[in-house]
Every structure is written in C-alpha cells, then in structure tokens.
Length: 209
Image 1 (cartoon, rainbow, N blue to C red):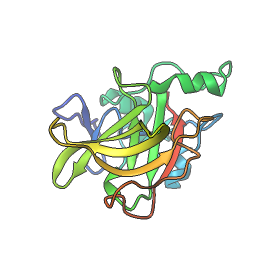
Image 2 (cartoon, helix red, strand yellow; image 1 turned 180 degrees about the vertical axis):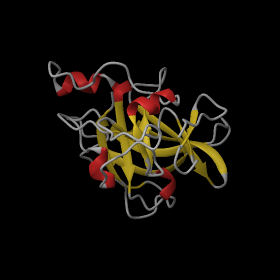
Image 3 (cartoon, rainbow, N blue to C red; image 1 turned 45 degrees about the horizontal axis):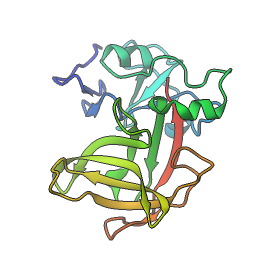
Image 4 (cartoon, one colour; image 1 turned 120 degrees about the vertical axis):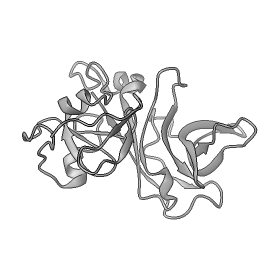
C-alpha cells in the first residue's frame, strides 16, 4: 500500500479509511514516560501493524479516526513530528513544560462532541494556547484551549473561533487554572455556557517527539 498525500500540505489522508486529518494537530504519539498520561496503544487496545509498510509498529502514530501507522510512514505522508525529544532523561518535568511545542492536549468524552480531539501549540501562538481544526454549526472553526483572567482569577477556556473578527468566540467549558501545572490537566472542567453539554471533558497531557 502506498502513502496517501492530500492536496493541502496541512492535511493528510488516512491510508485505511481515507478520512482527512490535520497534519499537525490530530495525532497521538505513543511515547509514555515521565510527564505522559497515556500510550496510544493503551487507548485503542492494539498491537499495531502499519497498513503502508506492513511491519509491526515500534513507534506508533494514531489518527483521530482510530487507525494507526508507523511513525516513519506518517512522516513520509507529511505528518508533523516535533524535532528532538521532549522527554530527554536529563530534563525535569518543568523543563518539559517549557517546551510547549511538543505538548499534546487530548480532550475526550465531552458532551459537546466537536471539542473532542488533540490540541497542540503552533509556531507563533501564545504560550498557553492550543488549537485544532474542526466543524461547528456546519462551519469550519478553530477549536482552542486558552487562558483568560476573569475578575482576577485565571481560567482555562475550551472554545471555538470562526475566524470572523466580528463574531465572538463560542465558549463550551471552563476550569480554574491549577498554578502548580502549566497545562490544563488535574483541573475540574464545567460548562461555561449552554453549549457546554454534559458530561464535561476528560483532558490528558502527553509529550510528542
């Protein structure tokens, strides 16, 4: 089987089901270690064989559709992998938390299904802003996890932006910032508006090579 490239350099096509995914956001890395909350093989309960090279995967990348492939073929398809290791044994977790570009924020089981997926920081974004592309009310939107200060208190907000500056963002969920953690984990999420359908999301943090 050959690798499937999409027309846009920012997207790639799943070689198994042909779903289109964003090349930089919608992936899970399989590295589990200090500071990581999950291994992709534990999430999907798999022993992976890459559909492109047909080898058993020792380094797995999983797409949101649930299909997996080896990291090498994922990169050949145009998928983005952060250079260097965010989990170098000589680094502390605090050092890892400063490397925001290598962080994946995974949102699962939210009642507002559109917010579920994998968020990451892109070059040029604010340090505490993580995004993924998606759809809401039949429109293309950018889902975002960001910090806001409300009456002197810091909150994480899970929201979406249409790209139209005249339209206010749609807020779904919020959580008070845990000052001991640089990322939106180990916090309690609750609906921010009526769009934040229950159940509230479960959020995990991982570091992606």
